Length: 413
Image (cartoon, rainbow, N blue to C red; front, side, top):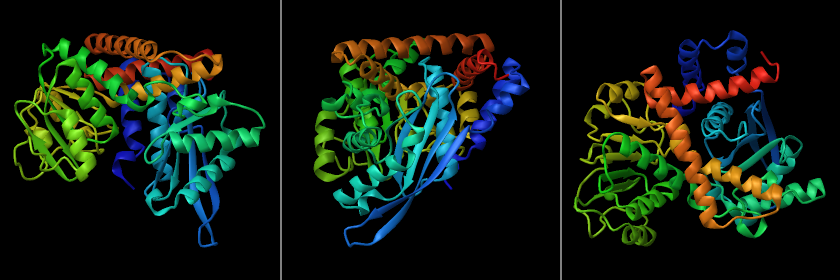
């Protein structure tokens, strides 16, 4: 099992927060486990005529603040513990940006690259049939995640509506625009991250024009690079799984994106310096954005990091041991449950539009997202100052207090 998804990381955060805010035992004990984790078998008739059974999960951690909310991932290494942990993170992520949702997560153990288009559609529809009684616009609202996309969400929405016998666009977010999706959803995680990065930079005296290193050039990392470049930041370092490109004068991100599509990597980009290896984290940049793998910043490489600000666009990129090293070095870390919450914030906006059956312009959605992210950053910063602690602990204090208050008000204490 991937150590990133060990539930003990949630337990460590909760234990730390409990001591700081004197969280009562009756509330605390309920947060130590998910409310429900469903395991299902999904039979799929393969192209060769044989039936293959896939295993799927849906974890529902806490719904005190509203319906469960969280993505569905298709990956060969999905586990029970992984979806449970991620459902907890989603609970605190929705709370930290103060949207009225709980936390859930789903997954299917599969390498989707090994499936034909027909098999992938059959699996997507089969998964929804298996869990349809446990989801709904007012129960649990899935979304895309690793290896899933708007096309798959469209299949899943259609299958749910067939089973339910009526239209229910709010049951799934991250859908295509033609069937109730929202503007900017494709780059909402990066856009939300850019808003909080800008706020954090102001707090520590960095101006637009500061240099940025981005580890990971997938959907989130590439969109983040394009957005920050337009805002006036200088992207000097970008890495992916195959290599690293550096240009101290600033990379042309549009050209780099085209080059990656053409070659499959940023490695050997003509406008960059020839640097062997992939030591993106150790480059001399003001701001570092881990947007790729979990645990990428650890006790071994944290001492070499030169950045003044780290913004966690990936989930769990900094290990607890590295957190302590970065804190001692005076590096400000904006935690994942805030930094990458733009995706779920826009998913919520999509749900609201589905409920109204009225859809806003791109500019209006952007304004709403900016308001959510900047307000949340300010609230967490105030808690950080009040408790003389780090941003991650402050974010968990805010989110746990919000979840706990909803539980008290429901009489769960």
